[in-house]
Image (cartoon, rainbow over all chains, first blue to last red; front, side, top):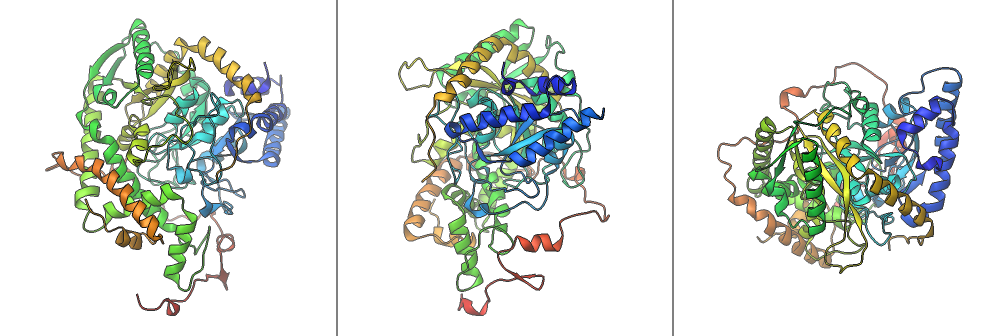
Length: 509
Length: 97
């Protein structure tokens, strides 16, 4: 087995036992990045020098007998909307192409304290707005399972890096599914924690009431371990919850027998493809065999979740992105007066999707439309939260496919923006309700409508839980991933080997 | 739903070309055609949810000094600064709005 194939759990164990050094693990990953990233385009920048210093520090600590932390020597890629002092943070946007972070996000500082080695910054849809990572101003990231397909988004670079073996774990952000959807598309684990569980300090804001930082990993235990490092109260984020991290990674093998799982029928009404549906049903029957009590249930307001999301998220985005004015940082186009400076800076700095969402958000917040759109959506959000509260009186978790389809082809877009937004239909409700949700691989399916190519792509199961009950969500995920573990490991290993043969990707026009 | 995109672009401080305005109008109308469904939901007497945490769970930071970004490091990021201030184009050159 190559060092880059090891997961976080095994790396820390071996590094602490001095079987391997953090520096050896890092060098294996840096070589892997230079070998396959030309075909995947997951990274926007690789922080080789900084990573080498961090790895040698971990090795020095171990040599001195000091505690190197729970992520000692684990290479970690970071979505390029999280600030790391002294390094670029582009958000996939021309607006911040030359911006250097003056401070470090809390989640980054915490994982570094625990010995994680930050290897680089990963690609994303501009300002995290998109579901394909094609909307980066710099390059379109490819899905390692099929480089003609998208890895999902917006944290597609982080997902692809982990799936391709370029990073053991990665950090992403999830506003409407931006961790879970790419995790499902690339056959890995992705978690959106409860709102308030992980500090947002240092995450470039998209929609502040929905954004959460969370982990990508190749298995549930690694995701749980990573969560332990980044979770916990932070006075620098006013919405941070005063709840300490839990040793989740050590509590995963609790029996799931007798747990109650609900399947909201509203979520299966959104054009779920036959292949994804059959993988989902297969997992449900295996869970039932383990003694999980599975029932169909109804959360009527979920039928409106996507529409509510596409009012609230753009509204908050238009407000958050007002800070890009050409005065204090980022791109600045100086016209004849200061109003021209605003307009020209923003026209040149923002790409088409970001502009569209700013316009939509500005419209729904404008004086004439506020009651009809924004206020109404905020009220329906209350109904969605109530439906979840009611469901969680009966059920320990709620289940759905993570996405209605497997990964789609690059450039496969219809004219109607709302059709593209359907990729988020399963995932947005967890953000609106602020609850934890995990995507775990649950098998493979053929893409619908492409004939019988015989090509199979991974799909994900979404497990949603009660606020701050990450423990149950992760426990269920741990049980589920065991069903397809062998098939997943075998196919992933083959996929990673074949990646070396893939063609180099080209930059965005 | 008819949208005055020119007015919205003005509010959003986005300079869009005539072609971009036309395309934007079409896109927004398609999105709003879906969102119109929300008008049919019964929300009378329902309080809005603006955040993901209960308002009483939120708190302000204590008034305790702690290390942060320096003024110099902030101004270093600015496209233009002078004597510790940001420099912007003058209002006078704007003409009448």
